[in-house]
Image (cartoon, rainbow, N blue to C red; front, top):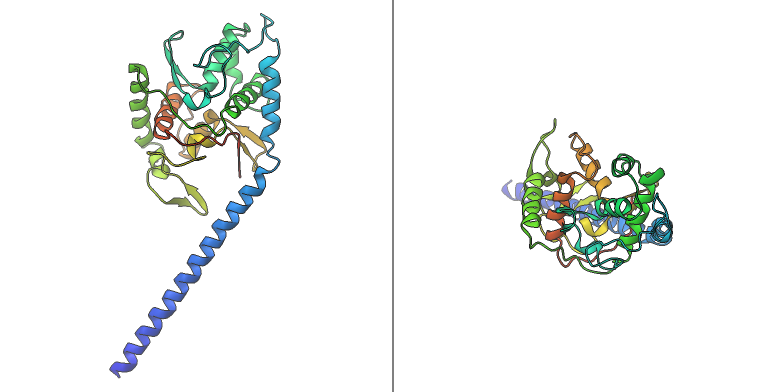
Length: 273
């Protein structure tokens, strides 16, 4: 009798082990399928169209001053765009503020081309039309010139260090009806929602992950999303009030994640599901 009980235990353990092995194999197969799907999407990425439009807008004379954006200073000197994206957000002496790529582009559109700043900030959230769409295109163009380069945000000035600390606090701040924080999804290793991996953004998440993957084209809604849009949608998913475009909160979060992503390779413009 004792032997039969022992045998049943062994058989049960073997069955459970086999079942776990099958589940693991199925899980790995599903992840491999997603990886292949993403690889296929990269061929003919619609983001290239936004990149091309952005380059045209960069060189086109527009606005009340009938000027181009070619003398815009993104932190590496007037007109130098390659490598700027992987060093933003950063502190700018001429404004006395830490700015990300999108807010800096608006600054140049105001100072170089004569656009109205308030009107641009009002239009910016409308990523599919008007100056909002134009801003998305130029953001895509500028960031694409740094594809393959590695993130190296400056974190030297008092303002940059302060924004990093603010971003860190915001990243872990819980709120909303579900008591979520950014860290709820992106604060541990190996996180996942269904088959969607959730990278740990409290440290370097690796090449082409986190800030190194946005702007990106979203296949699910046929839109080009910048980091400002990505962060606003994260707040929406938290059921938390969305921050205003270009707010200190969104820039501080980018500083925190960008500094943490030091040495990560940029793959933008990427493509997402």
